[in-house]
Image 1 (cartoon, rainbow, N blue to C red):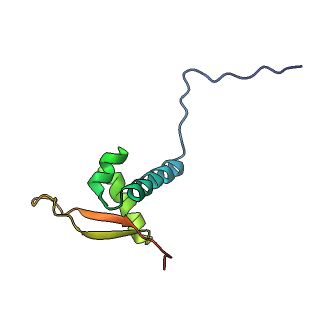
Image 2: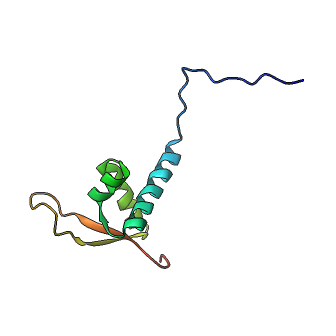
Length: 95
């Protein structure tokens, strides 16, 4: 005997757990840096379609964890704005 399969309610929207979204965004940032080497936070934001604030938060978290290295300020930074820092992935063991 075959049991009927419940169909989803067409008005129901499926979401995701916030921790899964954070993990996904973190991986997107790391993968973007890995593929492109040194990037500014603004570059990462444009390439991942994440907000600048989200990229800044993720970069700060990864810098604190020792997974990213902050480079020197970029020459293309605007004089009136805060200097852009380039980021690259730290290779080797984290201490």
